[in-house]
Length: 498
Ligand code: NAI
Ligand code: MG
Image (cartoon, rainbow, N blue to C red; front, side):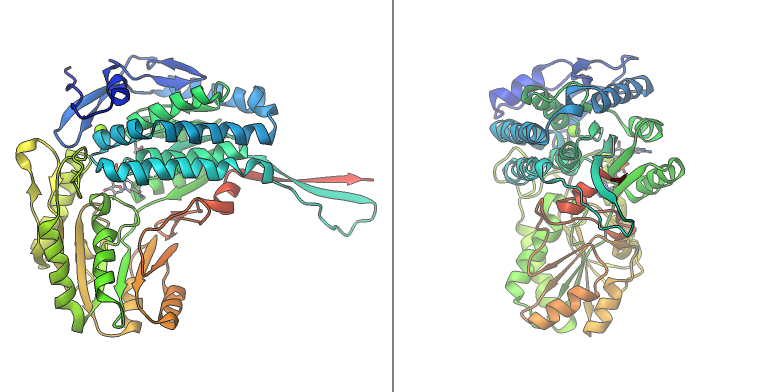
């Protein structure tokens, strides 16, 4: 098995990480290969070349990690640590993520394909911010004294950590999705089995190493690299108390069903087909710029991508041609190139899935305005040109299903009532957006749209304090803020006769 030499422009830190011949699991504070010795390769999506050999955790490894996490949860220094010290450890991890920001951004770009310039700000910057926000929570987790009816009775609640958490994350924002999950779990006092996606394991491995360096006790954060089999072994393990998952709706349904049968706690953050609506009174320049980023940022591989655009019929041609012009001038290239706007898709499988959708759009009669082809095919990478379809129909697969690539489907509409109804008609409800200069239209429509986040004159904003999650088939539960923390806490009611 030959691993490609690290690209020349990488920092020494990223190079030295990649020069390790094997990347091990992290179980109970120890770096270790898989029990059965299995490994897999992670690829550079810009070239299709392998860049790292990574341990593939099996059932034995999952079981060992669950035992380490259970011991850390019940008996270790973590279990008796003060809330202030727990917060300080999370803060230290945030600092280490920041200090290693360049290295982490380069590894993310190389492993996922995304532009390194965005990875630095969005992926790494927001990861540190997320950890830092949750570092403040442990000292603010408070129970209440309840004014019960019974005389001579003290009744109070304690907020206690849920326990051992399996956290399964996807490949589109690998480090950030790991931090979205790990930070609230650690703040609550839980212990964690983190499973990154098989396409992008590198930054989770690095996060585990940084957690050791920060001083987290052994067994608190275990990192199990592997694929869906590893994920399923975590979900199926009887001694895991909670599963948090971000990924496809198909796998989310399966995990939800298993969690239901075992009565495990579960948080699911799934797919989307998010409507982006330009109202007749919108600032069209701002709407075009924002709608462009809403879909093509991260090459469309975002759960909250604004993938379904609705434009008043009288503005339709103008908006579509402005977007097409921007698509034609967009720089598609390797993520490590500082000029790149759209990197490759994460894998050949994902490129083929997206190309399959593009073919179906053509076959089902959508008008292809721009793009529609694989790009930079000589590179060996998984590039797809930014693509724009126009159609009057809401029934085509490209208009209804999540594509998860740089493909926008635009449709004209006549009235606000009609567009609100069409925007709410699909299976998903993760996000929706509006472009308008009217305050009352903004708030009226924001109330009408069935989505977990509504963006008005912006798209995709996120903050660790602001809840994020989906209505309908886009998931169950919320991440971030109080809601996100509560998902890792149990309430215990204590009754005392006094
Ligand atoms: P996926 O849902 O199969 O993978 C996501 C994570 O789940 C990975 O860590 C994977 O190893 C794990 N996993 C897979 N099967 C599992 C199982 N049976 N039990 C437990 N864990 C399992 O998603 P995939 O195949 O990578 O992408 C397929 C589609 O899913 C994309 O085209 C996109 O539409 C959607 N997706 C949505 C994401 C989001 O942010 N909501 C992120 C990634 C994918
Ligand atoms: Mg990779």
